[in-house]
Length: 367
Length: 245
Image (cartoon, rainbow over all chains, first blue to last red; front, side):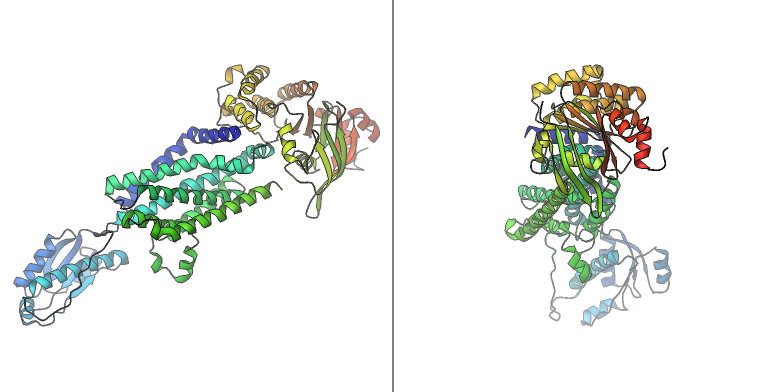
């Protein structure tokens, strides 16, 4: 036990003495939150829009007012005809155009159908879809108010987005970032620190000594568990203070699940380190084998539903996918263990499998 | 003092179809300095790795410090010291921290660690540098420090795997003085080397060729048995029969 504590102390010293790496590891979560929050926002604002209104009247004026006063839109111009729109789209001076028919007021009064054309710049499909949604919403509200009461009965869908009512992108990326930060810190750093000892020859000294391989590995990962928790807390604090991301569920549950995921990531790091001959190989393996799936196949960047089925199938072996579901559940929906037990069990299973694999390899290395 | 420190009987290790160590048999007395010589790839390191309990023999048996390496590797590990050809202290820890770490791993009491740290620093002339990072001290001292750390838990047998590669002649000389001091205190030293002049410092040597022991005895005995004037000639004759006169 004293040998083990001495070993943990040694690992902590390694970590504290390497100031640069430590600074990067501490700053990394905060910088990630800020970059994702400010730069990678998927909310669209200030959409440059043109309205084509051949015959302006009271009704179309009301619509124009609504568009002009909305935060989402920036009304560039109101023109009588569609000629010239094409050029403006190409130049980028407008990103959306609302083409109204003639005699809007009269058609509304008679209860006629009102064919409105909505042109959207689709060169960025995600943004295009969002712009279309905003424009449709504003049109519907205007139409509802403009049609005189007592008209023909219509079905109106009152839509409301639960858990993220204003579609803030911060709500989406913060859970993903927690998974990402933990994967980097835990898996990558463990893999590197174990392979470094192989490279310098100190691992051989340790293997010759009476300390058991399992104790070596356990001693190595403890400082990174602490660092991982610090990372989670930093992300949560940054997300809350800067972007106001709420925490609906239990903080304790979130931290416990993060602890579980840290173990999963550490186990991954151990498995990598038993296979990689040196630090460089470990780094490449961790980046290609862990970071990319964590970013692309976890639902962090691309929604899982939009992936082709082979990738969806593949994503189920990516631990971050399950962890992401858990974090989103706890943070945004306030879900408890009662709903998240399946994901939790999957993570526990994966961790045990990886740890067994890692320690089996360690035993074999002793030949 | 009667029981040998190391005994090996037909110790063999194969990697696939390649036989790295082929049925070697030898004994090393307590307090003896025993040299393992051979060209690169002759099987010295493989033999040593079996004796320190990190590599299982394919067949044959061996005891080290009175324990069987096959059935009691844990006990063997507690009673031996080991220094590898790679420098094996932690560069980003101080001299004292390195000593304390290894002391802890080998179960040396805190009190003993404290007194032995003082002894080590005095013996190798590093009193002033105890709190310096190992990275900042000269290579010659690092090597002596690594040797002292390998002896920290007072092992009965110490294994040195090419400990003097890459150090200057003066440091090598100093290193051998340390080895003699250690042997004089009753610790058995098994050392691999490919410096033939160092072989002359050993009480007995064994020359390995292609995994087998080609000659064994005191340096004088080996020279006479092979019929060569110097160990250089012995080595050439054994490793390249027909080439040497």
